Image (tube, rainbow, N blue to C red; front, side, top):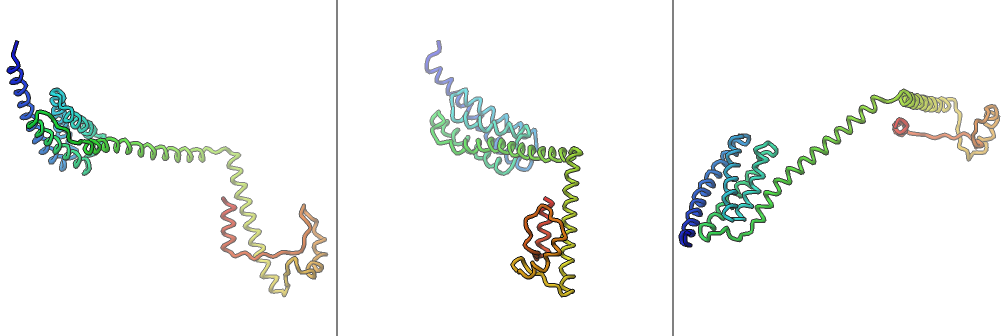
Length: 251
């Protein structure tokens, strides 16, 4: 059986190989990310970056460097979305990925000196990576909400086009009533100036003399389900107010 010294030598060799390989991958990662800024849709470049991070994650997990493994695993999730076109490469994404490279360097240096990946707080960079992932999900929810709104508008339009004949008749009746009311208002407005030219004076219901004078004329008209008429009432309505009333009737 190999003695403990042989085991230590073997582990040291494995660790040295890990440090050399990971160091080279980090240098390549930084170079590729700089190139990605000018070629954000380069699929081959994205795949190359993804494979580098995936390799670092696998070897780190094998050697028990859990913090390095967790960091690269979350970065791998973001890169996976990028290379499948489910997330766009923008300034925020680039900033977070470059921070990941800096953190890999720091952990790697700690491994070189202490043979472990230390205990530095990674919560900030992990939250940044999680924010990219959740931000993508939130974007999908917004897009889904917009699609639902458009579908609802389309459905309303289709219902309006498929309205029954009864509904169309009701709409036409409402329009006819609106036209009659408009004509009546115009007639009443024309009669008032004519009466003024003839010297006629209109009084309110509070004038007893006016009520007595117009009583015979009112008697000739049969009552039509109205309360006792207390005399002619005149209401002066500005034209702008009539327009508002017509708009309300139309609605």
